[in-house]
Amino acid sequence: MSIHFKKDDGAGKTLFEWWEKLDERRGDRAELRRAANLTDIAMQQAFQRLYARVDPQRQWKPWERDRFAAVAGLLSHLKAETDQSLPQAMSQRDEESDRNPVSPLRFRRLLEARDMDTLFTGLRRLLPLIEHKASPMALANDVFWWGDDVKKRWAYAYRWPQAND
Image 1 (cartoon, helix red, strand yellow):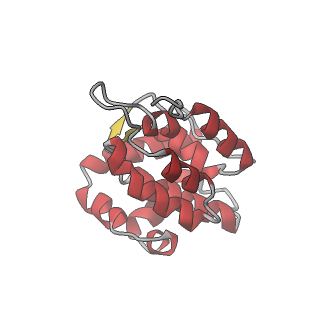
Image 2 (cartoon, rainbow, N blue to C red):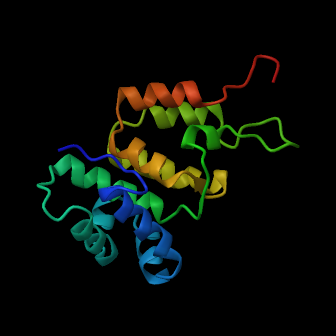
């Protein structure tokens, strides 16, 4: 059975509630934020507790575990919820700026991530550029289901600078 993260249903509800409580569990947030890669995340108690709660009956495939670890690790860096997807947040310019928070070159490199560890590292490094704000459920679904369809959707959602920008 396929996982889709929605705030008010199943695995998504558990994940969203966990994310909301990270402010109260500063030790868990700090533990996950220090994790440099997916192996580090998998070895954290905070992640293992979440992993055990999300879908206890599920027989996780190895790629699903890695992607879920990436989701949890990235959510630990997300501080505020917005209704913006990541590509929208990465290209949302401030009123006084004529540049995207995430440059087109950096965005393109992110889309070319060869594996989940590379994607995780790239996203972790750019979250400060968007002030740690995005939709937690959009982040969770996009990272968990990362592939050509998500990459294309992101490419269309990103606000590419015009030739005269």
